[in-house]
Length: 168
Image (tube, rainbow, N blue to C red; front, side, top):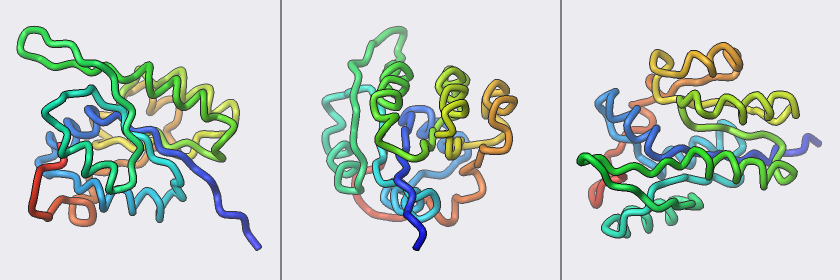
């Protein structure tokens, strides 16, 4: 009997939101959670977000869809809201390192290079999921070229069709 893998997903919420938006479709987070479970055996899926009090309905939907939310205070400047969740995502991946068989990093951000490098050395990197292969960091492509998947071709499978508050 084959043991089911116990994998965790670490999702850079803003990176995925912007990347999918650039592809001109909207991610259905509930479908995405199911996809993560079925495709990568994801038992625990964290989303890292900047906390905005007005987004309580969104946060509730994401929790109902099966995600664990990790927040960081946002900063406001020049009309831009910044969450800067990279350090939080990296720290959580390291805190949980002994709890999972493999990690799926959901981002195209090169700031995750040291984490990805460490996960590869430990034999713990399952995949990197980026919104678009074209916009994925060249650092990540060089380091983990054979372990990168793109969401850009999955719009029919993962696009939002539900009625109600938008997911992001």
